[in-house]
Amino acid sequence: MRRYTVISTDCHAGATDSHGGFTEYVDPAYLDQLREHTAEKRREFNESLAKLFDPEFMAEQDDTEAALGGGRTGAYDADRRIAELEADGIVGDVIFPDGTQNNTTPFDASSGPGAKGADWELQTVGAWAYNRWLADFCALHPGRHAGIAVITIHELDETVRQVTWAKEHDLRGVLLPAGVGTLPFYNHPRYEPLWAVCEDLGMPLHTHVGSAVPDYGDLPGANALFAMESPFFSHRPLGFMVWGGVFENHPNLTMCFAEQGSDWVPGMLDMMDNMFERMFRHEQRRLKSRPSEYWRRQCYVEAMFFRASEANLRHKIGIENMTWGSDYPHYEGSWPNSRKMIHEALHGAPEAEIRAILGENAARVYGFDLEKLDAIAAQVGPTIDEI
Image (cartoon, rainbow, N blue to C red; front, side, top):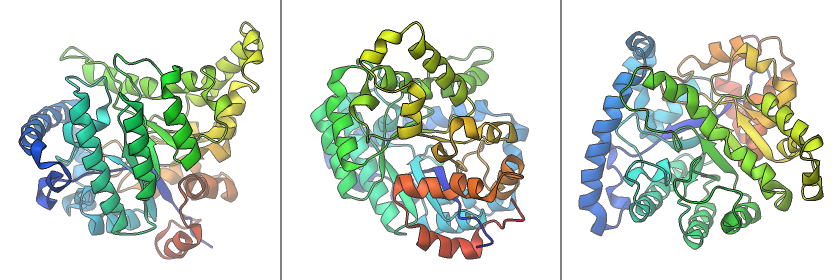
């Protein structure tokens, strides 16, 4: 085939009031609280977004034909979403929660237990509401989406119920909070039921920026510090999964790191391997593999913010361990210019490696029917010459 099959492993969606919101998915007893909480969160989010990015940077996307034509509404309009993805050369996507379209998850469910004012009971209500909505949303275009379920981690029997329900309703993974608030971190044995059910059901774990970032306040450089440090907090759980023996004890458990770049991987693996082989050699009695070997066997990184300098590290990261994402419909993503940005990152790489990073690895992790997507890509995917 003379075109590439592109699956974005980082896109975003959520219900907005113009399309019914989450109200039909929330227990009626919580509706008044939902309306109050949603209004407050919308105000906070819109204020923070207005301060986050440079206005000229935002205008670069706002002034595109796709944005002016209402392309961001695909965050909650399933038909528009498919049209926008295909126009951008993408035939399938992995869906995380959104917030840019007044469509954040109910009760801050996706922000984890460390979120400001987090309420476990309400976050649990919100997680169920979002997951039910997401399952329905993905079902509107079967085979084109892989929805990532939101989970809570305060009470592990409840967590197992959430993961099991998500699997039964064709969601393809779970969003693990990158921060745990006052709960123990992920090398604690309390999480064993979560690791076991995800391994047994083939549900990949994910961390994503946004669920473990401190409050930087309204001080100089706060926005840049937020953007700079968010990735660190999101890939921090990797060390706990390795040194805590989670990957050793659950060799079929998969973990994916989304929207946090990929250039951090080689340095972290080198550091952990060096520790394992020198000053912490005693860990070899407990861990049978080097940290980098667990990575190669069980981990994936979504190369958001993909640049040529990052692509040049692909062999150190692992060709089979990389996927790509457009971050649709966010400002910092590549939509609606994904063809151009993929070209800038990957031109000159062998075709087989490009195919693996852009689609084949994602199809393997999330269970996409590659033959079905290839047929669509034959019409809308970027050509070999374009990349």
